[in-house]
Length: 269
Image (cartoon, rainbow, N blue to C red; front, side):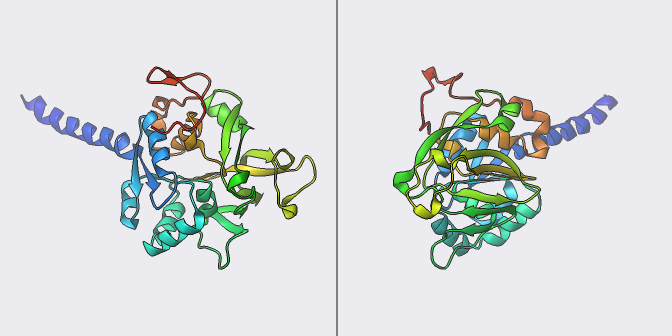
C-alpha cells in the first residue's frame, strides 16, 4: 500500500509533463485579422494539429508558434494597429517563437518593404530582407507555377516541385547573410506588365526564405492539398521535436483525403 503513495505522485507528474509536451505545444496561432486564416487552420487540422485564431495580444500567450496569413497587407496593418498588436507580435518574434508569414505575412515580417501605398505601413520586422510589396503586379497577374523546393523536399519528401499559387504576390529583392533561401523563381518566366519590373533573361527573385525562427513564403501553400510547407513549419517548434515524427505531410501526387483523389487547389475543407 505504501508503494501507491509513491506511484500516484509520479503518475500525476508524468501526466502533466506529457500534456505540456504534446497538447499545449501543438497549438498554432493564426493571425485572424483578414485574409486566408481559415485555409491555414484547415491545413493544420489535416496534419492533426490544432490551429486557433489570434486577434488580441493576450491570445499570443496561449500559442507557441504563429502563422500570419495572406491577405491585403495594408488592411491587416491598420487592423493590427487598431488592436495594438504590433508590440506583442514583435515581442513574440524576438522571443524566438516560430512565425511563418505567407504573402502579406511575408511583408509583415520583413525589415524593409518597397512599393507600398502612400504613407506606407507598419511592419513587425525581424526578417533581414527587403520585400517589394506587389512585385508580380495586380490581381489579374496572379499565377501558379511548379516551384523547386529542394530544402523542403529533403525534410518532407514528396515531389521535387511544389505547385505554388501567387496572388498579387510580393517578392524578396535581397536578403541578409543569415537568411536561407528556400525557393526562387525566374522573372523571365512570369508575365510582368510593368516596364520598371522587367529584367534581363535568367534573373531570379526570391520567394521563400528561412531565418532562425522565421519562415516566409510569397505564395499561398494553404490553398493547395500539399501540406509539406505546414509540416516543415511545425517542425521548427523546438518543443515538439520529440513528436515531430507524428506529423506526416502529404503531397498532391501521393495522397487522398476521405477517399477522394487529390486534385488541384483549392482544398479548403
